[in-house]
Image (cartoon, rainbow, N blue to C red; front, side, top):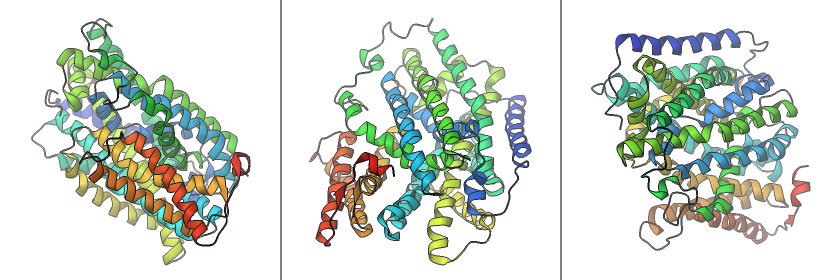
Length: 487
């Protein structure tokens, strides 16, 4: 992928290690000031409810931003992919002003606790938590390791097996979760974010300078247009169909993101942090995930996921390559540790406490589960080596979980009288339907609808399936409306 990147010198390796160690030390110095360390679920998974708006914003931003964004979105080499980040602004607004008050009112550690309270049944909580764990273990964790390891392999020498780099990144990431919980993850996210965003913006400026700030001349229109055609990764009409629901799921009902917003001392502090993350999302993130790819197209042609790496090798001064390596490592570590912490929270609170017994010390249980999930993630890394486009693959796979899970939130918040088994039926229908579309109907040409459009079909029919199942079970549901949903 990044074959043109030069092997770094010993000095550059030392710079990379030094920056990574400095972030670790600064995180430790901050975390050791914590007043609580009692092993409760709130202490381990919600930082004792003590995250200020700065760390909420930093953790949300860096949990999302990793090498799969930098590599995958730039790998499409078109401005169109910026819509994923621009629309994320709307998703964060919905999180701040709709979902954050609901989560705090219901005293949630996991988003699935809200579903149990709404449906008055544990089955839907268990199913959704299982789906989140499935997605984290099989998609998010190994994909983050793979994309980061590929970068590091090219920077430090292509003769070293990919799995070694993945292992190093995974071990460092797991250490943050095991020894510091969400508090350490959020602090590390924030400290790393300053360097990651700053260096990524510097790469954008250097890239534009390399083409005299002209990305228009001799460029195909589809590389510059923000109005995607029917065969593009984001057809324009999908911005008004499935895109908004994808954003609502990812930013407002996804445990990996919402857990950060639930760790502030008050609703207002959480909302302030989410709003800062939204501002970063719309002002800083879009340029760094698309402009380098477009410049790479002008310089090298259509090189796919190799675009970002080749551009960095072309425009970044050699003396900065060690800092760039540290940025890549930090991006992977922040995302992996954040998703790992959320996965441990889901297992500990939604499975262990519910079906095995009370957890007296979440630090000990979390450490054991973290080790297990880290080993599994490393073993799954080779599965992603044959992907044509990391970001498009991830978005399609996410559909298996996102719309079915979102249907449970919609049916539970907007309707009263829906029982938990009915919601389970709706979710199962959605997973089976989208799975059939992804692996059978769309490849065979039976359904030619774009996957973002089909997500709307999946969401709508999943809600309908839940309501029909509820009626078949002899229960009556009524539409509660948006105002009642917030109470």
